[in-house]
Image (cartoon, rainbow over all chains, first blue to last red; front, side):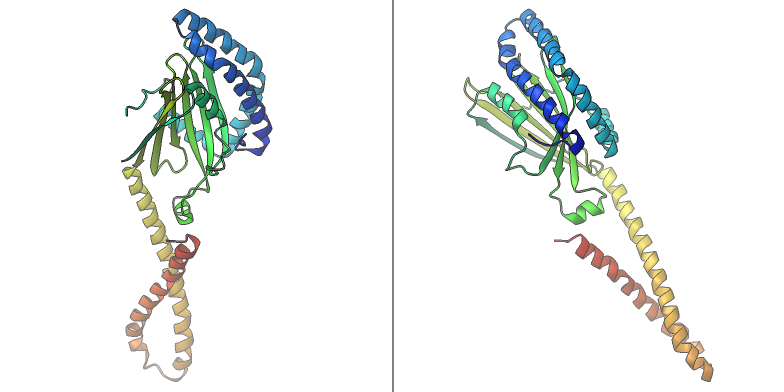
Length: 98
Length: 213
């Protein structure tokens, strides 16, 4: 597993990534199956989003505060802010056409 | 603006590719990616779409003189936003450089979608755009720096030559005053010579320190 940009955040990052990966591996295929109708999709999504919060929410808060500090120390917060203003990307972009 | 694109298929089902994308690094073939951090993630409870924002840290392969000239550092950072949509089985990953973005932006998009039950199509496009308006400001900055450097060195050249002249003429002044009228004619070409000499350290530092190709 890769490192964090700040060595002090690496243990938290690894714990968070492991938590996300194991959740995601259980999430993906049933999510595809649950997309048959919009009601099963939203029921499944809501339940799994909650589960993710329960499982990984705590380590995420710890890791996030560590990495936010590291981002700021390297002056990346301003660059990120600028990039977000230019291109917020809050919605999925249209997939590129061949 | 320059474009790049490539497309091919992986012989793995879409879900395997998408699970695998979180394990892409560290990668012995992409050693330039040295760190990855998730800075934001959300799971839409309605659509099930996962949005992830990450910062990738890379060791730049740019020549050192470019890195120095443009005030960058050896570490370059990239902002990456991915969307995983299980309902439509689309994954899009958009990346843009954070470092040196005032000079040029590299905007990359990757798309994974099922080609069949056992294959996944991969499509990658990139747009590279130099920011011309800002290149101009970089050029202005470079010009200013060169002018300052020139002034500093010219100053050194002038005071160095003043010493030479003082040493040369003080002895002779003891004996005679007849050289005084010629000094202006001698000084002009010498001044030029000192200004040229004063450029040499600048060129050397550009050539050695920044390893010009």
